[in-house]
Length: 499
Image (cartoon, rainbow, N blue to C red):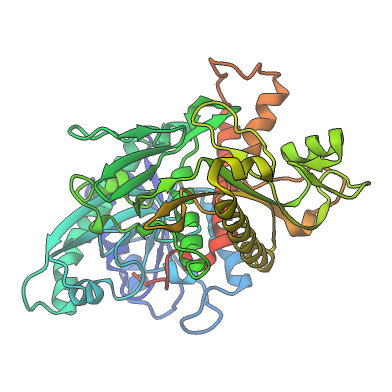
């Protein structure tokens, strides 16, 4: 077990930083504290850290309460590079950081939050828990990603809320639990530090007394009466074969992006989303936030239409191959002279059959009418195009091109309902607008990294799949995280809290 090289980012009183310094000094954590860095020259944590013999530095933020200025961010990254830590622990510093800065840090970043995430993210978690009338709260130690409070949970501890308790009283009782949990999570992290990137992926979700009712390539589904729980694992498939490795955080990224779109576009069409808050899930799921937090969605059940509703705004993938052969895509005649990645004159609706096994098959709109009925087919086409146009507009504002996407719909109480996932990197092709060039293949924010590697070694696309190099897995994980940050931004976690 390698000694920890801790780099602490602290703000204000910094009790968490002092707690970790003491844990290293008395042997509860094996390693060293390299430096304590704060945003305030008068922060009490600097004085206490100096007294304990730990080097300190100060970074000035752009203005009071703001995130770090670019110059301060560069100084932070330079300090991290010089100290070469194995892990960074946030101690009331999260509100100052941008997701783009975290991407450049290059080492794991941990944080402790005073609630049972994903419940009560952001500021005033204790007050909001009391106001919501919940009887139990706790603390969460988690990895920090672009969504800040949405990273993988490492450890949680629970605490009952007393009748009539104030937020200040609850915070005081939580603080020693936060201290203990932070140390324990770092100890566990240290013990598991030799794990490869793919080994950190959650490929299987296992409950002793509850098996999933359906297990797909990526998602596990639990039927719960009139509702269901969709659990996105980190499993990875390519060319309809499930690979031996997973992508760490992939399931969480898919779920958080779907949640964002279901909430943002709820006014266009009813959707099946109920909640991603583990605290609202029934047992036994509610008691296992370590398995289900961030990657699970409670949803309404609907009778699925057995078609994929595909909308294309650009020419790529199977659409490009079909166009080269016939000048059409799913029976839709397109202008001559288009190239790979060309923007279409207007988005087109190109349905496909919904296959439980094997590949989906592109079909014409007339054939779709024979499957779902003419009226429903017209409604599904209009709904799909409306969603695509709204999503493409948002994507453009984020610096992305939504080249194409596919939707699934069902029927509930006689109405069309948007189901499954929503505009995730697994169901959609996102391109970076700044590097887009017509006539060449684009770099997508999805598992294209994996497919490119498999094609480079000329895999025959049949089981058993080859092993993936760690650097390929890591690159794919970064692409998914980049998609989350660009599409969702800070909305995924709400306001950022100073902890």
